[in-house]
Every structure is written in structure tokens, then in C-alpha cells.
Image 1 (cartoon, rainbow, N blue to C red):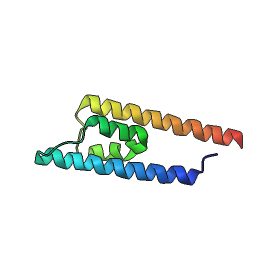
Image 2: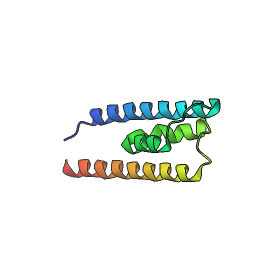
Image 3: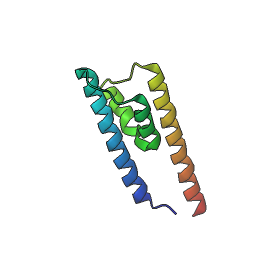
Length: 95
């Protein structure tokens, strides 16, 4: 059985990393520097970093008007919420 504490530490780490790169991309966009690819940002979201990125999307006003990026981020979020609900149900069912 996976320890809940390990999962929480992992999700905290990947969200901080993903959020940091998202904020760096916003800074690069403002200053005309080399950007972080959307593919990289979405891969980090798939890895679990979607929660902070979604919040930062509105706080930093970054990529929130780019529909294709926005919709993929919400699809990834829906996937993560579904995974969490399913695993919570399985854990409660097995007890």
C-alpha cells in the first residue's frame, strides 16, 4: 500500500516545481527570453503539478486566454481529480 504521506510530499514537490517553471515562463514572456515549451508545462501537469499551475494561470494572468492550453489544463485537472476520487474510494473499500 502506498503511504499517503509520500504521495502528499510528491504532489507538493511536483506542484512547486511546476509552478516555478510556469512563473519563469511568464517572466520569460514579459522579457522576451527563451520560453519553456507548453509540452513541458503540460507534462509537469500530467505528473501532478496541475493544481498550482491552474491557480497561477489566473494569479499571473498567464496562458488563461490561450484556449487550447486552458482546455488541456482543465482536462488534466479532471483526470487528477478522478484519480484521487477513485483511489480514495478503493482505499476506503479495502479497509
